[in-house]
Length: 313
Image 1 (cartoon, helix red, strand yellow):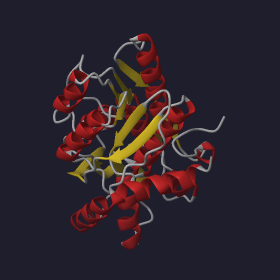
Image 2: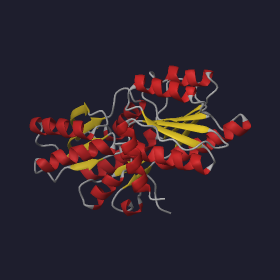
Image 3: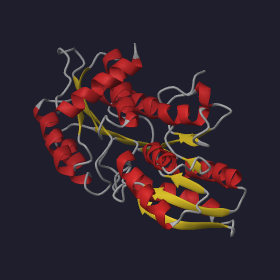
Image 4: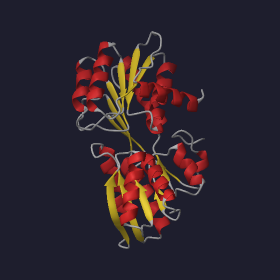
C-alpha cells in the first residue's frame, strides 16, 4: 500500500466532508472519526484504522469532526443510523465528547478512543493514548541539553480543551523548571495550528528578540514556529516538537529542528481496531479500559528511521 497516496486521498475526502465507504462485508461496518486529516498525524490514524479494519473483514467509513463537538455528535448519530458495529474515535474534547460516546454505547455500539482520553470511565470500551507525560519529559530533557541549561525560551501550547495539551506542558515544566537559568518569557496557545503558531511566533519574537529556544506541544506548531523564525532570519533558535511527523523528521535532518517525540499514531489506531474486533467476537477486550503506549525521542541519531509516525524495524 502507498501510504502517502492513501493519506492524501483521506485528506481530500475529509476536506470535502464526504465519508469514504466500502461495499458491505460479513463483519459489518466500522466508523472512524478523527480531527482534520489536514494534519498528517490524524490522517495516519485514519489510515491505520481503515487498513486494519478492512484486513479483518470490516467495511469502513472515515470522517473528520474538525475538533467541532457538534459535528462529532452528528457523525456519531450517522454511525448509529448506519448500524455501525464499532466506532474508532479521536475525540473533539475530553468533556464535550462524553455524552456522544455514551449515546453510542446506549445504542449498542462500543467506542474505542485513540490519542485523546475523555473525562469519564466505563463509557468507552477502550481508551488508548500515548504516554504524553513520559514523552514530554523526553522532549524536555533534549531541549534542556540543547539549550545548555540556560537561556530565554518560549512555549507554544496546544488546544486548551485537549487533555494532552495540559499533560505535555506539565511534563515539559517538571523537567525544565529544575534549571533556574532557563527562563520562559512567553507561553501561548496556538491550538495545534501551524498557521496560528506562525502568527503567535511573529508577535513573540517582536517582544522577545533574545529568545534562544522554542518548545512546542506538537509538531504542527513547531513547524509554524520554524517558519516564523526563518522569516525573521533567526536560524539560531532551538526548536523541539512532539508527535513524530515526517515534516519534522525532514526538518531535523536539515538541522532546522533539534528533536521531536514520536507517539505511534498508526499503530495506536490499528490496535484500537484489533481490540474492537476482539470485543465484538468475545464480548470483552480482555484488557483494561485505559491503555498507555510509550513515546520515543526522535533526533539526529534516529530521524532517518521515522516514517508516517512509526519507526522502521
